[in-house]
Amino acid sequence: MKVLVTGGMGYIGSHTCVRLIESGIEPIIIDNLSNAKVEVLSRIEALTGQQPLFYQGDVRDEVFLDSVFANHNIQAVIHFAGLKAVGESVAKPLEYYDNNVNGSFVLARCMRKAGVKSLVFSSSATVYGDPDTVPITEASPTGATTNPYGRSKYMVEQGLSDLFFAEGDWSITLLRYFNPVGAHPSGTMGEDPQGIPNNLMPFIAQVAIGRREYLSVFGHDYPTPDGTGVRDYIHVMDLAEGHIAALKTVGEQSGLHIYNLGTGKGSSVLDMVEAFSAACGQPVRYELCPRRPGDIAECWASTAKAERELGWQATRSVAEMTADTWHWQSKNPQGYSPE
Ligand code: NAD
Ligand code: UDP
Image (cartoon, rainbow, N blue to C red; front, side, top):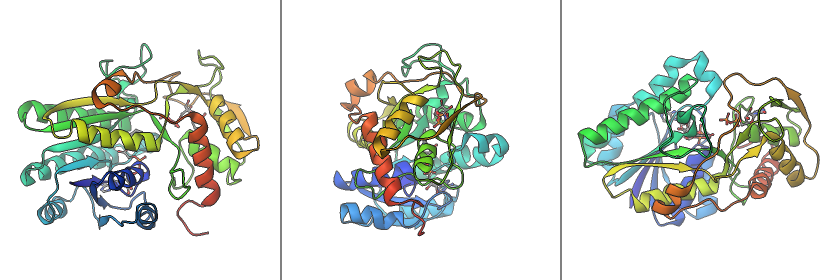
């Protein structure tokens, strides 16, 4: 089986490609390298013995996409490509809507022309906004998003749902990721943010390796056990396996399939600092700071639907997430860039 993986050179896409190859599925990657390094290809090869086919190009480029579909017998698409920095999306809304929303619809149009109607889309728990209750189920209200990034994900979900209701022969799977963290256990692949990291784990990892002085803990007066924000952190390898489970179970069944990919457990910022300190063998310096605008107090997934229908559940602990992140960071202090 050949699967087109858009954004396959990125953090989640690259780990998913490793698992696809290991599952006997051939990934064909397209990526514009706006947030990835070509070095990722040799890392995938080092882990799997196979270098996936890679085309550098943009999902908004219809002619390019048509030629990729024309040249390969692609059965399904996993669509990771997009921009993902919440703060940047506030400053550059048009870029985010163009990349994420327009990009997804150009892709869907090219899929339809090519007769490929199985699509797995990278959505996000951000579509739930600030939840009234936790755990969040797939039936929880969506749409009360707080920034252009979140709205772009919600818009794509809406557009793809409309597409399915208009053309019922599609298999459309919306995977709502909670907080992906961690790295391949080999330390060969991991998250390599450009510039100052926005997300908690890569920031902690850069403090631990000495690239940053201390972590700013955003908010310590939330109604949570220790006052810091609580999230559902999920190991990127568990997330990768969630995609394989989705492809294999619902990827060939027409329908609109929606799943949370999380662990069902919440951890606070200070829980993560403590776990990372244990993993790297030294305390991670932090300072308690005011809340970050737009953040919510707590958020974690109900995993029941994915367990029941996909036969998938996350198995890796926070200790493994932090240990694997540290392994990657300490083996690759500057990420994929040479020192
Ligand atoms: P990433 O930036 O590492 O990967 C995205 C990849 O897409 C990059 O390699 C980038 O070069 C590529 N890309 C961007 N725009 C493109 C375009 N127009 N055409 C072709 N390639 C393009 O991000 P990630 O963390 O791996 O996230 C993958 C997907 O999952 C994204 O859609 C993101 O919004 C979603 N997601 C991520 C998180 C998270 O916390 N990492 C959480 C929820 C959802
Ligand atoms: N966070 C923090 N300092 C940072 C980055 C994040 O305290 O430098 C907190 C943030 O307020 C939230 C949690 O860590 O409570 C996870 O934030 P992240 O940006 O990783 O993901 P989000 O849940 O916002 O998508």
